[in-house]
Amino acid sequence: MSDIFHEVDEEVRRDQLKKLWDRYSIYLIALAVLIVAGIGAWRGYEYWVAKKAAAAGAAFESAVTLSEQGKHAEAEAAFAKVVTEAPDGYRLLSRFRAAAELAQLKPADAVKAYDVLAADSSLGATWQDLAGLRAGLLLVDSAQLADMRRRLDPLAEPSRTFRHTARELLALSAWRNQDVTTARRYIDMIATDAETPPGIRARIDVLSALIGADGKS
Image (cartoon, rainbow, N blue to C red; front, side):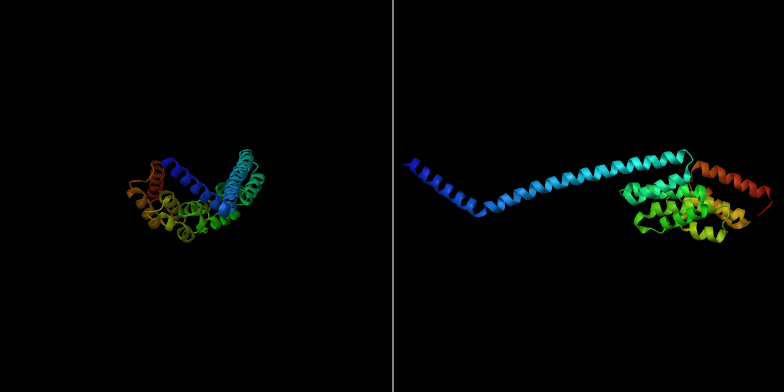
């Protein structure tokens, strides 16, 4: 008798499942198709991204080769092209490299390029500071101290990544502009910062000796 009830229960379940399938099969099939299509689209996107990154990498390396060969104008143009076509990572590196190549030919234009990078908040503080520092390196032998301070004083603050180099450039600029008092102030900032790299500390010691040899105080 229990077998009969079992068979009846199975029949009822089959009927219920059939009714559910007849009612919802179109939705289940559509969902399955969407899942398969979504996976295919994602795989296609991953392939496209990888292909684009590989092309950008090859273009970047070609531009680097031109730079190493001393073909700065061609390298600058090649890096500029990567900027317009490459993914974000290569784009950022190429913007800096294009400015560096420009510095070999037109330093004033390179400073402008670095200034644009320094003002681009989308890059983040570290990259902005690096751009500002690169501009300062190009200007240290020619700019007035006031301009250098406007550019680099914020970068010389204790919390900034490139504060050591910024302070060194400011000390050099102050000395070149014959402002010994300001030069000594930056020298003291470098000397009292326990994290100052040995190379910068050694160069500042030389600058301090030069100031002493000049008989300035």
